[in-house]
Amino acid sequence: MYELIILSLLMRHPLHGYLLARIINDISGPVAKLSNGTLYPLLTKLEHAGLIAAAPLDSDAPLHDRPARTFLLTEAGRARLHQLLMDTNANQGDYGRIFRYKVAYFYLVSAKERLHLIQHYINYCQTHILYFSAEAEDLVFEHERAGHVAVDAAFLEYTDDMMQHQIRQWQGELAWAVRLRDREHARMEKENSG
Image (cartoon, rainbow, N blue to C red; front, side, top):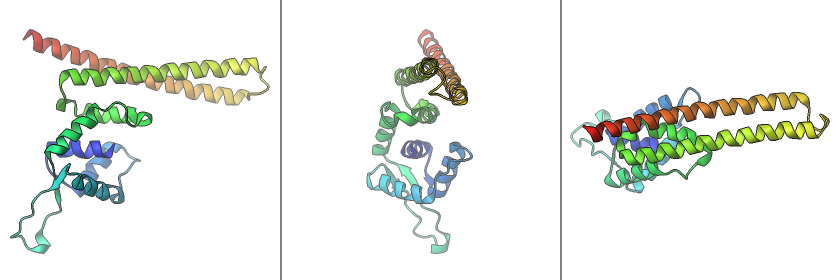
């Protein structure tokens, strides 16, 4: 996920490591923080892979005035960014969060590709809704079948509440994805008619 975010940020303009970390931490939320121990080895790895490059330093600047090392996105990095944006198979367990990052960079892919990604996410949300709905039904069925002996009633209550909460969250994600799809269709219709 961090590779996607770093490459997408560098797509806009060159940045130094400190600013990359600050932006990533700002968009990650109040709890998840990217450490320097994670960021700088990743930047080194991306640089060795030819996906990013260090901007040339001003050789005339005194050593104490030299700016922080600034990174640029290479052509190979642009190709890798596109590949990461279009990937719908990696990190399935965390794909909801990854999709939200991808949406900010939809302007980098074609309308057809955006629709593909949105439809995939709609299916992803529907799968989660169906899964948690079926699991909640199975939990109640097993509780009734066991005659209230094998499963504690409090456990059933809290577990069902958690599953219903999951369903509502995924329904919210689904509604958002449908709005994205509808907006994309409207944009395409406007472009085709104008």
